[in-house]
Length: 457
Image (tube, rainbow, N blue to C red):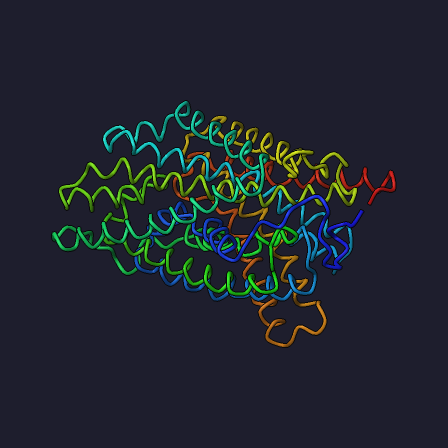
């Protein structure tokens, strides 16, 4: 069997090449442009745009360089797991790949919870706050979408790609509609006076870590390296197009929220829909809010599906390489998809979604999931930038990018542990965060130790 981790560029025989250039562009956009990240950063006034710019220069650009260099040096299925494994060996590759996968066991639930908060506006602005805070409403939508996207992605990459493509297009339309709402409100003389700088505290450092995490996603398509039609031709342009659209989307959406909603009233789960509601009311078209909520909810659901499908390729490849139980490396005999890896990922996402609500409000559960995802994500990205620095023949600028990216990653790793002001119980928050990070890492270490003990890795 040709292993995806061999680095020779040969295709894993089980999967089919279905991803073209625009599939890659939309996959990257739907993975990166998650507008749930905007409200939490807009509370700092126009200074938030400075933070977005800083995150772009110090994290996103090094990430883009790393993905381009390493995907060409080590082509194949597995992406970040494969690259780090080639440079640092099986153990480090497994740890990085495991953390990358485990990250999405938290981040996919983050998107599911935010999606439910957005869909709440489909019931009308008056009922939305109560629904968004309802555990029952959020659970029904979150678990329902999880089942839907799991079944769709098991049925085939082509079917799953349609969800990602629709989600990517919906993300772009959502940004445009947010800007239109801001323009209408300004034209009607309705706008908030956002300060240049406000409320800056340790929360700002935490938000910077969230911004860096928000710009993650360029590497996601590379986990499906053997499912791209022509990666040498398509990957570079896809990164450039998606990168430009992503940072513009975040900056413009943040500006729109600042124009429309007073910073003291921006809700973590409802900020963008608040902004659109104000713009629609100014235009005398409040009836537009429910269908727009559905559109934005679909965009967020598409992002959840993209991260779910992409990250599941890591345990799939690890199963092929015997670093994880071999059944994870199986493919469906009819649909030719890694159905066991997808089912396991879905089950664990459901578990972490459910446990995050224990003893917490919906908002605090959202914060626990988000910060756990940020911390877990920083581990493989520290490895990613170290890999770029250590790879021979990459050039001085690539090495500088690796050092800058590594330093930014370490800052984000520390900052993610700082609780935000909307956390009611700091000790419970920190305990959940530590458990959410140490538990998966410890489990991964145990599984890898078992595989080496039986001579499988």
